Image (cartoon, rainbow, N blue to C red; front, side, top):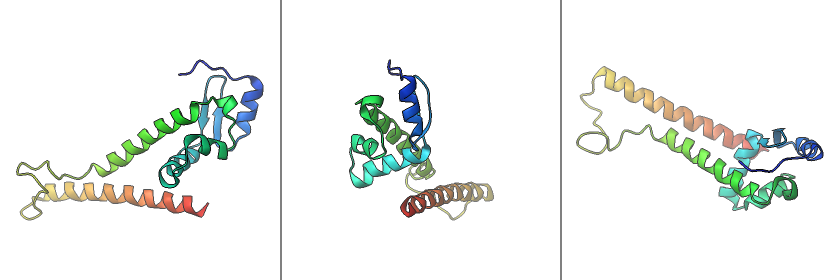
Length: 138
């Protein structure tokens, strides 16, 4: 955590920004939409962290020159971890013979377990696509 302290005027200015959920004298809480948009701009458009924050209306003299880079680095790690978790439902390689387990001769319990995994994967995929469509409409 940084040792910076925001003044009352800086807190008021930061709170006016639509991308800020809340602000205290020690920290800024950014909106979830801004975080997702920032990660996508970084990956898809190749924007630098500084460009993303400047476009969003932040003054680097208030938030600090390293803040955009550090925030984006943290958000990218979280985004990557969640995508990996949603994709890690695959059972490939965990079967004792290696490769994907055979679908034939499965017990009902194994079949149900496999279907639950597939449903969880498809729900995560649908949620991701819905968020992507919503982001493109903006």
